[in-house]
Length: 241
Image (tube, rainbow, N blue to C red; front, side):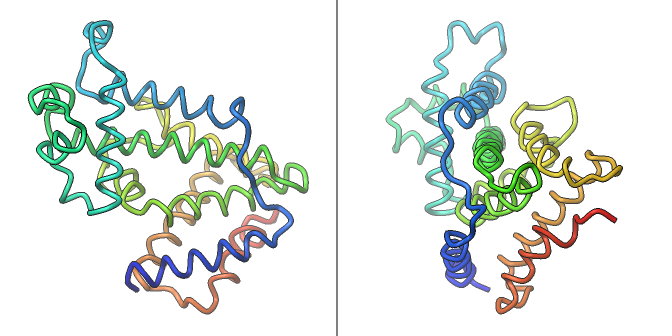
C-alpha cells in the first residue's frame, strides 16, 4: 500500500471518528502543554550534544529550532534529505554551530524522536482528559489519538520507534518523553486491568498499536475491515477475562 493509499484510509477513519461519542478534543495548556514542555526541555538539554555544564552558555532555542526544522524536512522529503547542509540553508544557522549542537545525523534523529514522544504523550494525555464514558472510556480515546499521530507523522513515528533503538520506552534510564507516552498508555489501560499487571498490559497495548500502524502502512492488512480491527482493539481485546 502506497503512502497515498494508507493516508486515504487514515482520513476516512478520522471522518468516522468525528461521529463517535468518545471523540477526544484539544485539551487546555495545563494538561497537554505541561507534558510537551517538560519533554521538550529534555530534548533541548540532553539530546542536543551539549553537556549540562555547557547548558548555561548554550542556546536552547536555537537547538530546538534545528530540531523542528529537521522534523519538517523529514516529513516533507524523508530522512535521507535531512543533512547538516540542508538544515543550515533552511535555518540560517552556521553549519559549524550546527555540528556543535548535533555532531551527526543520528543525534538529530534522536532529538526529533524525543520531541515526537513528547508530542505523542501530550496527545494521549489530551485524549484521556477529554474522554467520555468515565475511566473505561479512556482507552478507546487513546487508541484513536495514537493512530492519528502515527498516520499523520510517519517519518517522525519511524524515528521514534524504528530508527532509534537506543531509546527505551517505558523503562529508566533514558529521556523522559518515551516514559511519559508509556505512562499514558498504562493509565488508560489500568481501569481495564482486572487484576492483571498494568505495565504488561501497557506493553501489549503498545505492541498492538504499533503493529497495526506498521502493517497498515505496509499494505499487509485488509482495508475493508479496518474499522472492525479498531473496534476490537478499543473494546474486545482488553476486556476483563
